[in-house]
Length: 211
Image 1 (cartoon, rainbow, N blue to C red):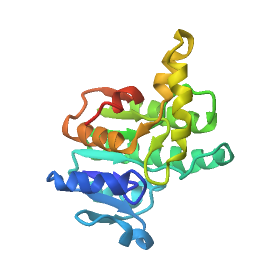
Image 2 (tube, rainbow, N blue to C red; image 1 turned 90 degrees about the vertical axis):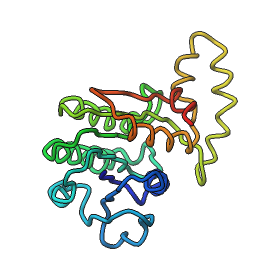
Image 3 (cartoon, rainbow, N blue to C red; image 1 turned 30 degrees about the horizontal axis):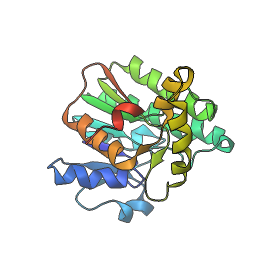
Image 4 (cartoon, rainbow, N blue to C red; image 1 turned 30 degrees about the vertical axis):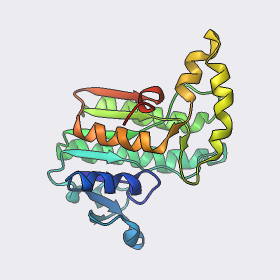
């Protein structure tokens, strides 16, 4: 399989899980970041914003996992969501379709939501491009991910719990409640080992029960 974002928060943790289960992983990386890749995977040097720089390394990969995204998203990074998140997704989808990849896995975001509109718009645009590509795909839509270095969202859990008590806010609270990192990782592994036919979406509430 081929993966982008292999040195990132999710990618650096999911690659060891995949290789431990016998999957062969090739990860896109910049030359200066090669040493940060987890062991057990093959490095493909290239630029996530230029699909042609790595298209030749996709080969016969049956699965393409796209995890590129601006770190620590905030409203101040609206331009980067278009220049990096959306552009890299468009390039990944383009070259994956051209290579005949059988299954594309995309890390998106929960929506709708009352904040981070530019971030959500970029991810929704990428989802639409994925739908139009004809690729079989799995889309993950977490909101906040709880894990090392991402502990502050725990402060929000009581508010989401309270919101679930009321019919008017229950659905939104279920969709936007933070999900633990291990659940996101297990969902990615599940998506790899149980490829979608057409488009399959994992919302936050489905990822929270992943084991």
